[in-house]
Length: 347
Image (cartoon, helix red, strand yellow):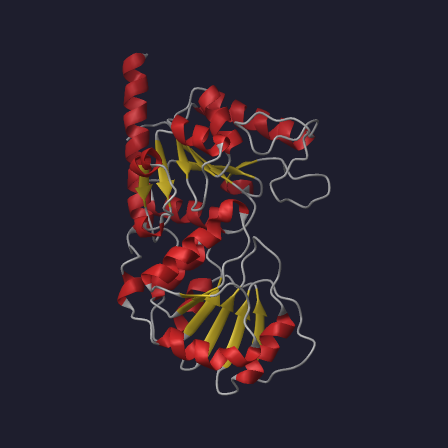
């Protein structure tokens, strides 16, 4: 194994990037260093790059920008600081590889600093010039989803360069589901859930217990069978206890639901590059989830729950790999070792 570290850049919008990084670190051989905003003592903490408004949607409002960049605001001290910090860390530590999850700008910075990269390629329609340049410049592409969830429009060369690694963050929870428990999972990457809509839905199914985890507004009316738990530290355990899971189509939630093999009502949330919609469409086509375009009318819930319980479990089971994190860590480490040996031979 190379003595050189592996850098792992972690994007700070949403919780999935950090969960994926920590799972790979735990399964690896101890030479991965995190770089990102909020990693604190776990790695190299970077200045925040969000706009002064605090609202981050990936838009930099620049009046001119190269096609190879997505987010490059002008005269932003946080950007200057984090670019300098990453470049300095690369100069001092001489990493054998940089995993980038996700930022085309950091991928380009690493290559400019003479470091080979692995780019974490999320699902969706990422055929724009900036993504394709980051893909071309990478030693490999880590796709944290099953190959069967790939949208049809992905270029063939991108598929061939990808290593599909589902199950990185999906850890099955021991035990059986609680009968008649519906779990609604809200992520950090979008707007909070509508607590009043959840309360109305719960009242249409009084024999079922509804539990909400993640960001959610307070319901205006009370439902005896509704529990709004807020953010929890072990969502996999909550998913394992559910009879039915309702949520978006982020890679982390899909992985956890497939790992637990729970009936899944998928309501994809708006994300850049149609990330969640692409995954949801394929889940529906494969029979691994019941996919809805939005929150349904209250009267629809009894029929929807009945329909999702009829979906066969084998469609879900085949989309999960219980060794996903270990396989990802081994693949990354092997790439880093090969890169280090090549650099040593060239020295």
